[in-house]
Every structure is written in C-alpha cells, then in structure tokens.
Length: 395
Ligand code: NAD
Ligand code: MG
Image 1: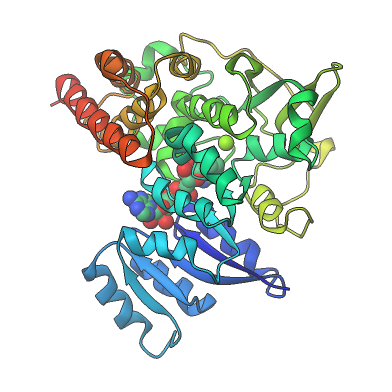
Image 2 (image 1 turned 30 degrees about the vertical axis):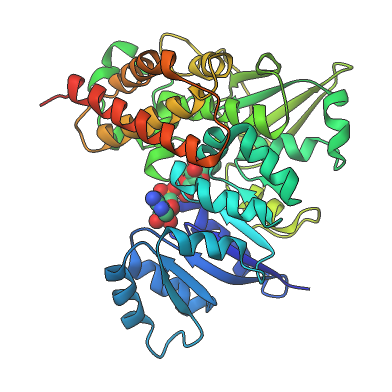
C-alpha cells in the first residue's frame, strides 16, 4: 500500500531530502501535497515532477506565478493560498503522513492540525515542539497521532528505544545528545564577535538551512534539541546531557537503567532519519553513503565549553523557568538569528538578545492553556526581542 505524504516546507533542505527518499520508492510513497514560502520556481519544478494533488503558497502573487508555471504541466494540482490552506493540507483525509519541515514557530499551527487529525507526524520542525510543549504532546495523544522525530539526534534516541512507548521511562537512565560543535568549535572565542553569516553557516559536517546552521554555530540548536527531547521522550531536564562529538557519526545515545549504552550511528546525512520516519517501523534505502570505519579512524568526545557556547545552558534554565520561558527563548532566538543573517547584529549578540528578552519577560509569564495564548506570547516575545536588537544594532 502506498503512503500519501504532505510536505510542509518542501523547498527547504529537509523538504528536498524528503522528496529524494520518496522518489526512490514510488511503490511505497506518493506525494499528496507540497508547500513553500519562497522559491516558487523550485516549487513548480517539484510539482511537475511529483504531481501533487495540492500545493500551498503564502500569497496571491506567488499563486498566480505558480499557476502560470504549472499550466499544462501539472493538470491535477490545485494551488492554494495562505496559512489556513496549509492547515487544511496537513489534516486532509487523503493524507497519511505529514513531514513538518517548515523552519521556526511558523510551523506550529499546521503541526497541531496534523496532530489533531491523527496523522503520522514526521517532525523536523523542532521550533514547533519547543513552542508547543506540553500542549503539542497532549494534542498528539488526544488526536491519536503517531509522532516520529526526524531531527537526527532524536531519531537516534527513538531508534534505540522499544516500539512500545510505555516502556521508555523504565528503560532510560538518561540520554546523551551529540553535537558537532559547529564551525567555531576550535576558533578563538575572542574573535567570534566579528564572524560573518557566511562563516557561521559553513557547517563542517551537515548541509542545512541558514537558520539551523547559525543555531549550530551558537549551539542554540542543541539547546532547542534539549527542550525537544524533554517533550518527545517525557524526560526530566536533568536526564538530558550533551557532548560534543566532532565526527557526527554517533547521532545520540540512550544510557539505560543498568548502565548499558545504546547508540545509533551513520554518516551525517538527513536522508537516514527521513527514510526511517517515512518507512517506520520498516526500513528502506535512504540513498545515504554507508559508514566506513576504516576511514573514520577515531570517534572523539568533548565537554561543551560554556564560555564559547553560553546559549546551551539556556535550555535547562528555560525548562526550569516559568511556563512560557521556552516560547520566549525560541522567539528571541529566531529574531536574533534573522538580524545576524541580515548583518544587523553581531554573532555574539544573539546570546545577548536571548538572555535580555528572557529576563525582561520573566515577571509577566503565565500558564498557556491553548495555542492562541502560545502564539500571543510568541508575538510579544518577538516584539521585545526586536527592541533588544535595535538597542544592540550595529548601525
Ligand atoms: P530551510 O530554511 O532549508 O527550509 C525551510 C522551509 O520552510 C522552506 O521550504 C521554506 O519555504 C518554508 N518556510 C519558511 N518560513 C515559512 C513560513 N513562515 N511559513 C511557511 N513556510 C515557511 O530549513 P531546513 O534546514 O530544511 O529546516 C527545516 C526544519 O527542520 C527546521 O526546524 C530545522 O531546525 C529542522 N531540521 C533541519 C535539519 C537539516 O539538516 N536541515 C536537521 C534537523 C532538523
Ligand atoms: Mg539535530
């Protein structure tokens, strides 16, 4: 039987890798829907190749351009517009699996729609679960959805755990998330102030979108992943540890109650966790090169340096803080990374924006009962972070 897949963010790094895996298995997977925010030309090419039933773009202008590009080339594809259409695609009755590959909190609503509709939710979009937190997990449970992590570290943990989730807590002593250390692992911290966006996105092991690449350079990516792991695996924050592993071959580890350690290994290629998520609980060819242990030589581990990577500790601070702290941290970081990529903010000031925004909002945080209150807080935190960016602005 074929699995019908909707891809939210199909033109991004994860979206393109997902289509690469799907194209290898036309007998197993069929593309129901695609979406993109920019790069409509690439989206058009994807539509011609995969002939989706639905495609979603952000505005009428993009829809007009896309309809023109598809005329006569994708006759069965309906072009839809806006955030509401994205949610409709994520919960469409024809869809079996939703690949959540949008970057940022913008992906939260369609993720929640897929969760509520009981889909297989393949989650790359870590910001959505960082912002959604407990509400996200509750919605998955109540909707009868199957949540499958795609982030390589969380896929690794997931692959090391039994299929029966009720056994997880009895089995796990703690987990160890591995981190590459990014492009600045050995750079003199005194010179980080002046690094450029080009230097920050030049990741040594992974090819990824710009936002997550900057997050890898600050290690805010790992901070978000700690929060993600807390919700995905129902762990206490102190059960989550981070170690730098520059080769990116061990993708993460579960330390069991008896002291035994289970790890998942592979080359750093997102098609492995994507293929695992798509085919779960089976395994299919991903297209990734195999690990050659004779080439690797050594697998090494280092303690993350808190001076070099001050953002990492914010994960545990935000998890221990008042409800909503993780929403504020994520929003501040999205704004700060944008400003850095637009050369309005120094690299080291990303952390300054994050901590100042968290501090300035701590007293006003309240429990967040629903998605509207989450998104209202997200918007407020973005305004506050923008003000911090203006204060620290280079120009
Ligand atoms: P990317 O920037 O390459 O792609 C993002 C996609 O989302 C694009 O298709 C873009 O058009 C769409 N998009 C952006 N803003 C949007 C908005 N406001 N509304 C709707 N669509 C929007 O990003 P990526 O590297 O593919 O990462 C996607 C997600 O997966 C992120 O949350 C990232 O943290 C996570 N992730 C990525 C990797 C990786 O290797 N790239 C690994 C692990 C996790
Ligand atoms: Mg990751």
